Image 1: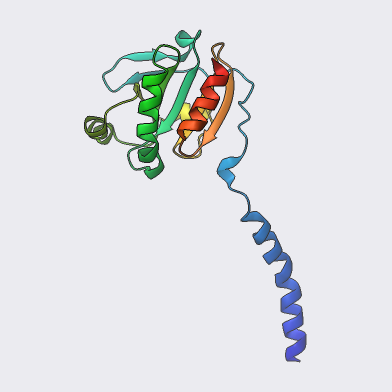
Image 2: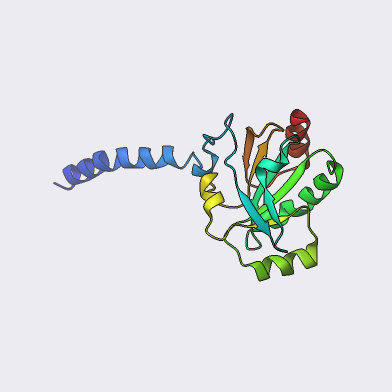
Length: 170
């Protein structure tokens, strides 16, 4: 009797285990963005000083659009990488940060301590994050000079990755 129960339990459990094993191989954050090759969703947001920035007004140069937060450890790791890239590409690329589910006071403290790499835009209702399908921070969208989303990177950017992508947009 115990052998039948064990065999039945094993047969019922096996498909579930196989399904779980296959599922764990995929990170849901790495799903390709449906925005690639399409016009970037427009927005006009204010930075922490109240200056309004309209994405459409930035056409003519590529845009690096990074969703980040102070509570995000990978964002902290990529911060100096973005600072260096912003200096290197200052006249050729617009660098924009969108604050992702964070508090303005925390962002201001963070920027005072570590410095900035571009305007940090406030997205109070996370509408821009939703429009871009942001799953979490950091996520970076590369928009070409005509306003088309060329590439998306989930997770912290490396210097080589940044140079490869921005070099392709310039």
